[in-house]
Length: 343
Image 1 (cartoon, helix red, strand yellow):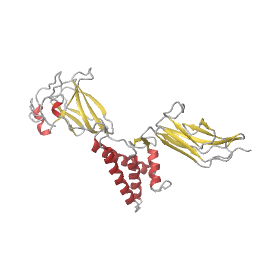
Image 2 (cartoon, rainbow, N blue to C red; image 1 turned 135 degrees about the vertical axis):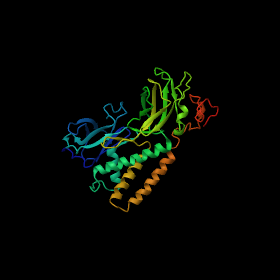
Image 3 (cartoon, rainbow, N blue to C red; image 1 turned 45 degrees about the vertical axis):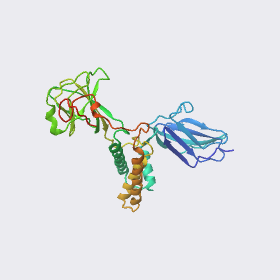
Image 4 (cartoon, rainbow, N blue to C red; image 1 turned 45 degrees about the horizontal axis):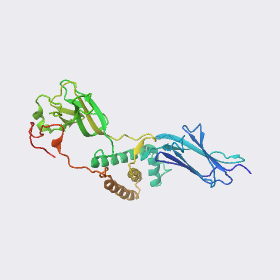
């Protein structure tokens, strides 16, 4: 008996924190050696696949530490190679294949680009450069981000927090560089008490002078402070006193995708919208007539997202809020202790 030949086909896939390695069955093999590397140069064996029947695949799991104690880390690029083995020796290893281990629900830029190229049958085409593919995918991802954010607020993209300390005589405070949409403005009655935050209302610019009496806020959360977005600044009336702690919660703008390891939250398969849109953009550059077909696919994906995205909390959907039941008593119309509330 001689050593078996190298498996003729070899694939690596990733998803949900696991890397799935598969290869062709090799005649005469009694086991397979699976090796992994962080740099594509130095490999170590992570599994020896044996048994009857002899499987031709292996799951490298990042979450199942009991069965896969040396599993990969998520958001990390790995290289794999496989060799067939029997009592006479081992075959040469396959050429290494790389993959970025992604967490549950996330996909990488590298994965999205490959899928978009496969979708429009342009995997080995050089008509669209790698930089252009990345640009198309970034643009498609921003479209998806805008659609979900505009329609469903911050239900799907968590708010970031930015804190200010007011200065004497200063009414305008710069928004954070990655600011996209505002979700909440608060002031702390007592910065040392995590339960002392009071929610602020916005004001209409034509009414800004209604609030030009001294800054007041009380232990019970009553305050006349108001805010308004003015360009890239948060504008506060009346002029806040020095040393007050304020914070905003906001939806950050989506980042540009550049490295293959950059990740996108696919939520529930919504990355298909990105894949189809990027493929359509590539076909439009080629002036291919099939771009029309991808436009129809994009519209189908958009309709699916709009239908399934509403009410992420299906156990208790959103209700109408009574704005008078906030932490403050000033009415937004008359500037005083008005009795009328708005919903």
